[in-house]
Length: 363
Image (cartoon, rainbow, N blue to C red; front, side):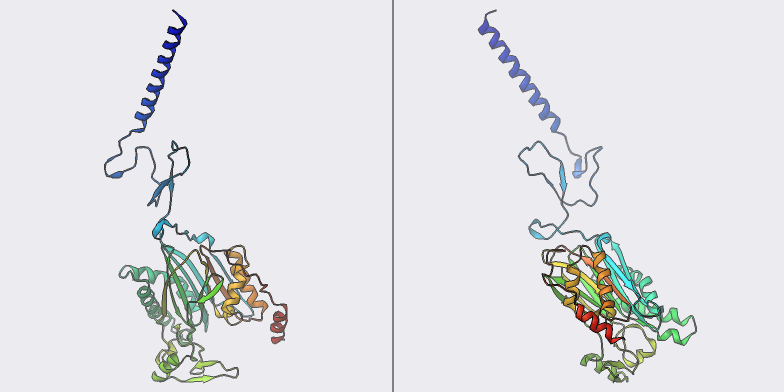
């Protein structure tokens, strides 16, 4: 056989092999999917998946799916807030016992629950709320989807249940126990609803600035004071200018305090709803008055923004209140959001002179 004929034969054989290989690979990729969009046999579907995309690289032979969580319009991903990243701390201060309580829980896959309770007159009311508030919220969710209505119902229901519970002890002093309640619920990582009764607070740090989400329920507010007076109660001021209901309670709303219900002290919370902006919002913080009475909302925001994680932040903010002279229990919950660590304060937030001044106050 001549050389030109041999060369032509080799070229034809190579072309045939290449074409056969291409057809084999193409056929192997044409697999019929089950009806209804089900998964392929032997392929496990990713849990909680709602939308898939593929790697956008030049080699389109790689077709491994990438899970993208559901998010706002335009395909923006919503950061997932995990309970493992939430920080909390509660310190005794100079009190004999810690009457503060806190709760953190996942109610549903897309619904998180955070709460702080600042007890007074004993820990009975705060203990009960930290144990059962979540249950009453779950019960309310079976009848109502609006989270503001859910919180209002849960606060009133837990107050009534607490009265029944404390009455079993046949001890009138137990009925004088009460607690503040500040509860935050985060649904879908975006919908934030806060309910509060008393003077514990919730604040949102947005672009490095503190945004207060709650109002302190004290007799200093005209509408609160008028309700007390219309109900037959009265307001007095102590030696340091602090207003009290019937000379006993520094707040006009609380859970418990049943000896003052007839004087206008109610359990119904104020509520607020807003959308979390993860590109701007660094964290949500819930704090009791052992912190609030010593640090301003912006100081709390600045201190937390200096911390590496939420667990450190909660502990630091509680300890900072003690350094500034707080004698009360101090409790904080810090929930990191999408802009965590992006808005650190450039100024130092530790005041040595303020620490000395506050310490001298108690000398």
